[in-house]
Length: 374
Image (cartoon, one colour):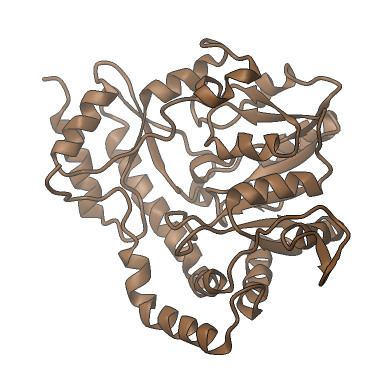
């Protein structure tokens, strides 16, 4: 494509007004020589935890590490099984596998693409230790239903909140539902760093203490390694940027939600276009705006036409976890998760970011409408 009229993600709306402040923060960090486990990290950990209604935040090097180390700190280990949706980014499975536990995949709700708790009931065995609900695309799995499910079956809840920073549903904020929650601060996330980064939120003081050791070579005090650890620390420079951005996050989420409402109102009447359902109202943070493309339209043809029109799109995700080549050892086959497989064949993510204008939404809708069969 020779040109882009509407990008899939544009971070300039966030970064340009803050650029001078970011540069000053980084100059201060450089002058002070504070790069690892510095004061900006401590400030951001406290601020993000408080904003999410949780007691402790532990900054880590990535969202994948947050999942893996968080599950380990919660006691998940070899021989355990963890329920996880088939429609998620592969990092959720990687986090489980790094503990030695087995991910047990569950099909999805066709309206929301979130884990289907009714299907999850059928996957419980005596080895099931936890459920890892993914608050996909910025929408929480129903909090009370999730709590009831976990309590009924004596399971831990490990929230994969990588796409749901400050999202909320039924008065409950992401990260405050389960034993712990894992976040990613990948640059394009609703709250994004200028590189990789992650965090675990938890109300459990012992889990928080373990994670602070795990991320720092297993040392709760310098050179005394009581735990088996690793090197996984959120950089002080990245924490400074995230702390600067955090006060703007709610407004950015509201802007995403407003554009999403415009998309939905305009796209719902169109034949072959089915926006995913929003059961969270204003609490949906719309990390991604996802539609299903169904007959008489074809997803690949529509995506190619939008590309030709200069409109960037994405697919999240084109291959379900159970069909990924590296994970065939889990023993799943095509057809095992029909909803997830159908979603993978139909879903299309449209441009979504703070700063996306109503005029741009209208242009995307017009480009889709122009491709409808006459």
